[in-house]
Image 1 (cartoon, rainbow, N blue to C red):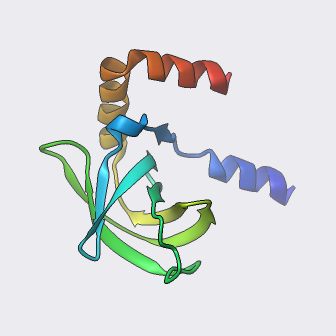
Image 2: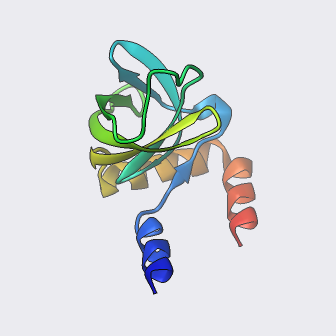
Length: 121
């Protein structure tokens, strides 16, 4: 039964994957990193040098979702996936931010968004 609860919890928030050329930027400790995926409670950050990071480490920074939208993010490292760090956020994008980002990707990259929807089905 716990497996079902874990699955439901993992899918509670919509995740938006970005095409490589549209990835937002997050600034953490003065360094800039690309973000490949966001949700209201998490972000997937591309980091090539993971040697000083560990699961449970608290991080905070600023996520740039376009020219006029910056969001304070705060969270802990949940896990690693190749050269990406998955942060579980206690502070991050709102539902409104997610809807605006989804609309932006759908309008600006319609082929990419359609491909994502097809592969998810």
